[in-house]
Length: 129
Image (tube, rainbow, N blue to C red; front, side):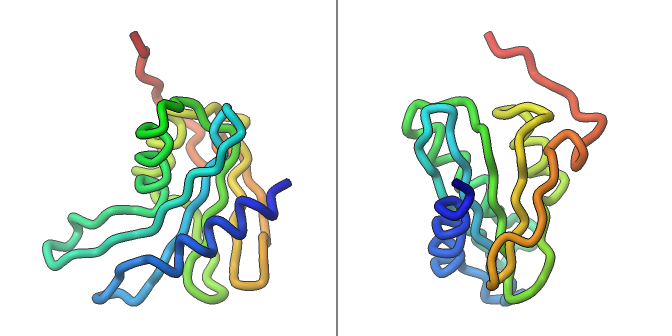
C-alpha cells in the first residue's frame, strides 16, 4: 500500500524547484479519506523562506477539504536519508497522530518507516474548534 505513496512522492520530487541547494524533495501524504496528496520543495532567493515538500502536500490536502492524514512518504535527492524537518514534523502532527507511519525513501524505494511520534516525541497539539 505504501508503494503508491512512494510513486507520488517521486513524481512530486521531479517538479521541485531548488536552484541553490540542488536538493530536490518530494512528499506524499494519504488523507483519512484515502486520497493521496503530493508536493515538492520550493526554494527562493530569500533563504530560508523556502517551502517544504510536506507543506505543499498538506496544502493540497487542505484545499481538497481533508484535514486528517494517515500516512506519509518523503524522498530526498539520490540516496540521501531525508526525514521531515522539525517544522514539518509539527505540521504533520497537527493533521495526524503519533501513530502515523512516515516512510523515508531513496531512489531505490522506501528504506525505513518511522512513527511520527518517534520523530517528534514532545509535540504539542492545537485544539481545533
